[in-house]
Amino acid sequence: EENIRETMNSERASGGPDSEAPMWNPFSQPFILIAQVFIRPLRQKFIHSLAKFCRERVQITESEENEERFADAHAPFMYMRTFCREYEFFCLERDLKIEDDRNTIQRELIRLHNIRVQQLLVRRIYGLVWRDPQGVESTVSSASTVSSAMREGEAAALAEFVRQHCKTSSLPGAFIDMETRPDPSGGLLRPGFRPVAFAWFKVHGLPPPMLHGTDWAAKCLPRGATFKDQQSVRKLLRVEWSQGRKPLKLSKVWYVIEAATVALHMLAFVLPSAFCIWSALAMQHTWSTVVCPPGSIGGGPMLRPL
Image 1 (cartoon, one colour):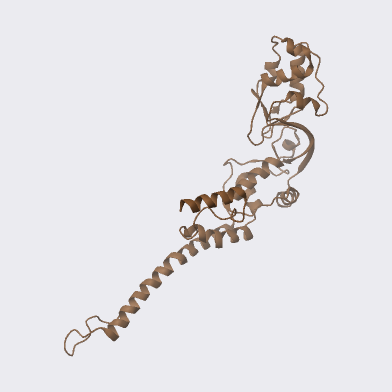
Image 2: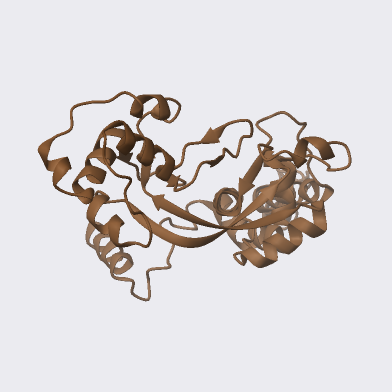
């Protein structure tokens, strides 16, 4: 058994023909087998995964009631990348069909909830975050000792700035915009890399760095950080995470599928047991009427028929 398990693990690791095989024995876990064979196709066919995700996880405010609020630049919003990442996790947890085309997702959001989508061209450093996001602007205003290495060139000074005020992060959604932009939660501003770096260079008496293009990033950014120039991103306006602020609404299709799940479990476990009991009673009845000897001379059988 251990050799078979090692062979299957190596086959999955190599991406062979058995790499898609399940990690469990379907006949030893009948509930999972029923869910995979019957319930999962029903969920993927009849449940609208995007509508369910918006209904359970997202708070969408109607523009007619709050037009003045959402005209403000600091209104809550959500990046399409973040929305799609959480949507995929949601579908994987519930065995729902995933819509992987972002253009289709955008059209469905507009059709279902009349969500406004804004497209921007941004310059971002992915994999890099501020050490102190709230106080980075006040921290750079205090002058510190300028080393001789920083005086040698712009790249060395910029690398020192990154070392003092930034750190790498592998978390999803970890990035620093080149310009100061509103926070998705609304009401706050995320300090941009360029204005903070310019303020730090000014405090230390250095000329502002040239941050055009991508050459400077290869010389100054640490390993794990990637600079993307002129990247297109989409913002979903009037959209924020519900975080339990609205009652959970479940569709009628969800109740029907859950009822079907219970019914299939009962059919799988009650009917075979009932058939076995009926078979045993039928055999007892047949034996008592045909084979069972009489209890006494001229009397009835020892075992009465059912």
